[in-house]
Image: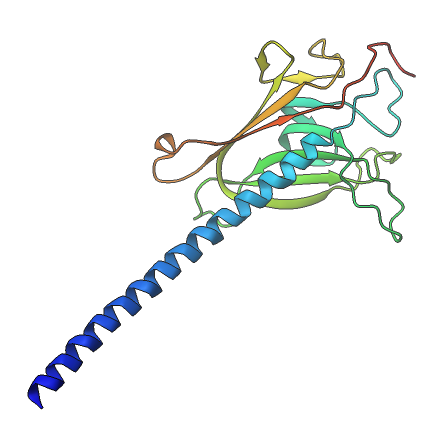
Length: 215
């Protein structure tokens, strides 16, 4: 009897250890999936915006498209400096909305609402009415990712990378879209320098066939 009770107790101890180890592994896996999901979603949206970028319309008349700009920029309707401003064909066409699929999209970092959280928040700001006559258009701010230390966009012109791009002709001579855009997102943490940045590279196939001014 004593031997049977001892064996049963040993078996229960082993089963309990395996059970709690499995629970811990499940919780750790779920936490890893939960933390990776916002990053994957943000990168997927960003990749789609860049891949569907619309070629700029040069000249003074911007009809159904606009410029492609990268750097530390100001954009109408957005109080924070933006890292990129582009026109992209990713708008959802709906029967109850009078807008097409081309929309203006910017990405910028903003201070988080919770000051105790590290880093800043990455926002995607969307302007659907790109033909608005008002000086300040309606902008839809979309939260994408929290805990971001920095976000950088680099443009490839076919031979070299540049941290700035401006098809308006004000600060550069760019008249077309870059052939590729590289995005680097550095997440905040206890030691951001030891954590490699998240990086994606997006080729851009849409290119204007002429550099002539279109009115």
